[in-house]
View 1 (cartoon, rainbow, N blue to C red):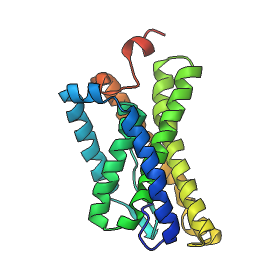
View 2: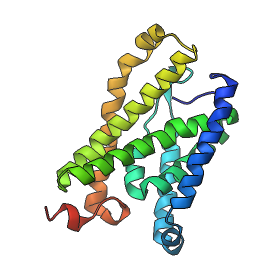
View 3: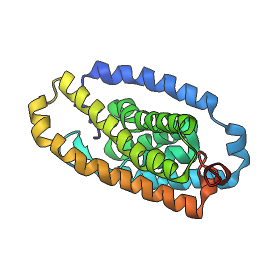
Length: 220
């Protein structure tokens, strides 16, 4: 899933910097800085979750460049911190991961693909579920956690495949034979991981979830 420097056209990698910049500026502008800076516990949780996500991201299994898998964990991260801090966090994590790989030209592309895209998808699904469906605990766990994580990872995979095929890095026939058959085996564990972590946080540390409130979800 990680894009290398020489994999995509240089102009596409360069253009991704402008999109990442615009998204980053919006995230910085809308982030709850007053609350974040005044709450040392939130800062510690944010740093701990970011380190955990970084450790997850540096391990990837694949057979060809970009045609690999690693757990994203972004859905839990988004439900913990919201869209703005989630976007800022995954961007910083991508910088740290890039420091280990050296693929600086592809930094913005990886940040958008592996960070901003699943964060935005996860928060969008949460918003729709929260607005239109009953505020029930199992709805939150299953749809906002388990299903949401599977969908976010699926969107990342489909976007990656689209980029690789349209830029003629790989043919669709090769991706269909070497990569796509393993996607279902990746999506379900991704959903399980996020769903289990969300369930554990609700039971042990519900205050760590920005998008969850006991009074809202346990009284309906």
